[in-house]
Length: 245
Image (cartoon, rainbow, N blue to C red; front, top):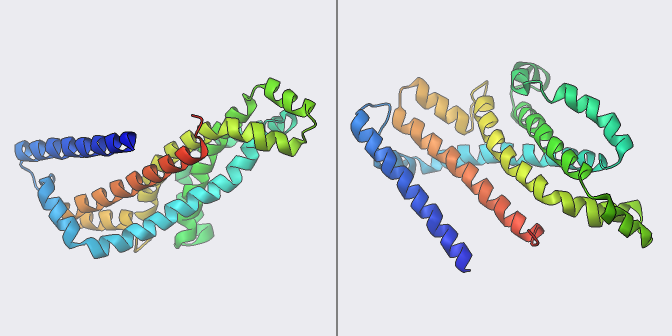
């Protein structure tokens, strides 16, 4: 409980410092492009109903994309513990991972349309490779001593994955997931600025096109809160799943 209380206070202090720096910069810059934080927060609260709708749509797209990527990347990555599987997967990974997948957005829109599916596909594709690379490396680096110890007790291959490979790889998988959340939020903004009428990215771009800088910053604050909420949720999951770390 004491650790949780300290963490809450650290978040509050960090938030206060950010707001203070923002206020000082706004005071000295004196530009409509950098409104003071209290004006932005007032606008955020006054538009809360509208922002909440766009925020929920963005959250749906990000969470769905991450879950889809996880469901594919983790089984493939863990199976790379087997050298025969890794020899098959590695060439595809080395060829496909370096491609800047963000440039595929026009093609994905042509294939999947302008709805949620195209945005989920793009975010999921990018996050998939990030999680796969980390999971594969974690599974390949599991000490064979633990595997042989379990096999000597009569364990099956399924038991090896359940009791050795997955627990050993889980901390790195969750680290990859945290990194992927930041990537997913960034890609979300890009994806929602194309051919869409909903989402925080759309809200920010519309405010920018109207030179409504206060609403623009309110949208940015909402996107930051979305990312922060996902990080807090992942931290709770990590505490529950990786109690030994």
